[in-house]
Image 1: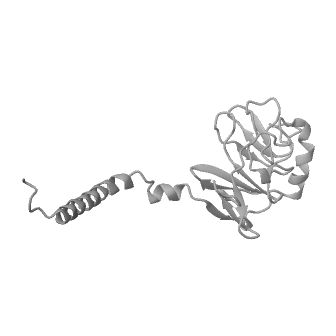
Image 2 (image 1 turned 90 degrees about the horizontal axis):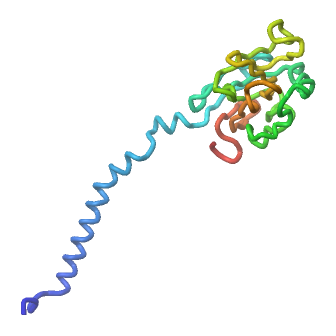
Length: 198
């Protein structure tokens, strides 16, 4: 017989070693291909949370911060601006922010963690235009009931100083509030909250 004199133990060792070497080769060939499916470091950095020190924002001032290719508005509201929020209620479509356009911790009267700082994504919820910051009270072009806020000149949508949309305007919902949290009294982290990254 042909198998007479064959060392079966040695045969199994050679078959096993060949299998191990072949498997390692497949893994070595597949790894670079699979690695190309992972997002690049640049792409990961583009989606990373952004730190911003709100201490540099003067009362009444709006500062734009970029996060994930979107403009995030950080506005330092004055006591008068905060007081105007309650006066706006009759004009608003969703004064209590019942539509989920904000994290749960920002579903309150000021739509914020700290009443003096508003953090909003500066994109109109109608067609994606970027509204203008109009903090003045009762300007001639916006009327006597304007108490400051954000005005989208593209189609006339109006939002108050908390980003709440007025009734009977094209925009259907309040401005979006991104996930955020404070790392200290003034250091804001946009794009991540207590639950983790967005």
